[in-house]
Length: 183
Image 1: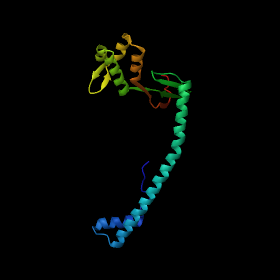
Image 2 (image 1 turned 90 degrees about the vertical axis):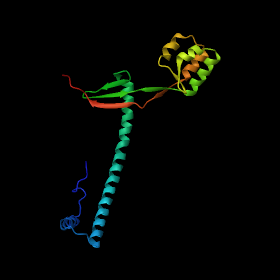
Image 3 (image 1 turned 180 degrees about the horizontal axis):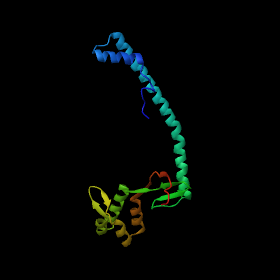
Image 4 (image 1 turned 30 degrees about the vertical axis):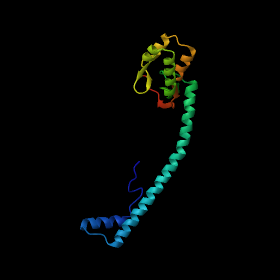
């Protein structure tokens, strides 16, 4: 909610002086300039105090929210039913909680290089050209998984292939919402 003049009121005497000077197009006297500066300082101090109080209140409220969110995600993970590919849904009477659990897969550049070197040593350059595209670094081609399924690789090569992919869990998301009413 925005701060209004009534919440941190401007001194009525100062407001009247500013209005009078504006209407008469007069410059303020040094004493009036001091009064204006003092009023401005008073308002800035009141604003800073209000901001500090708000920050403190937000801090106090955010910790229980973060803790509850973590607990709810675990409840949905453990007791929710399947919803979508990477989501689970926990049903209440009026509310439902949906948590999404996802991962990202990236390539480990060093592992890719080890695999590339080993394929060259084993004189499997045909497979090397199928698996990778060259662009100053080696990246698996989009159909590498299908190619690997069809190839007979030694356990050492397969281990090197698997080391190329790094699976990282992403932070689960939580959506708490009222249930949709049946039409």
